[in-house]
Length: 286
Image (cartoon, rainbow, N blue to C red; front, side, top):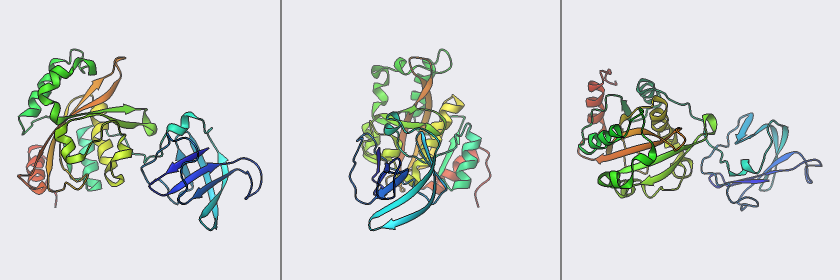
């Protein structure tokens, strides 16, 4: 069984029984080795660290000392805690981020991590398109949260250029987000991400922020306003205002995030941040 990690140029291979050169309970990392098994396994995040445990989907490996030989690194596999199945081959290694459940928790985390983001439960938007999109969401929210299918392409047509739709797959540490839709107005800033998972497309240093605003919309189960500096994909000269609103699937599970986005370069982030913090009654940052 093999899992490729393009970002770190390694391939992990599982064996059973034998010596270091032959089959044994070992993990082998080989530089510049192409995928040998399962093209579905495409990792984009550098999760390899000098830790005592590595989690690979349903596989947890306890590692000890390594022996280096040319381009190969052999690790003794002391213990396999979970079975590595075919289903696991489609799982990608990913960073584990805590799930944020409120705007207050989001803002505290943003300060502690130095994120240029703020979350606002009041949804007091500055750009006219976002209140209109919010009104559509509320009109379809008969039971509190609209179904994805209720927001048809015809209803969303006036906003299509500036909306994205993210779908959550899995839960807890196994959760991932896939971009189901990305309007052309967003593509010009972020590139075409439709069909990709966050951990495939977003640079690793920004990934926790993307998880954060998506998680908080689903956990809070209400629409939220997010303002940010558009650092992702080298757009730090822009700021953006988001509407992040949860949607249900056909079975009633809240797993989609509808995101309306408006980008703006008129004011620097410092001015936008100061104004937003004042509106929210938050102390200014020193």
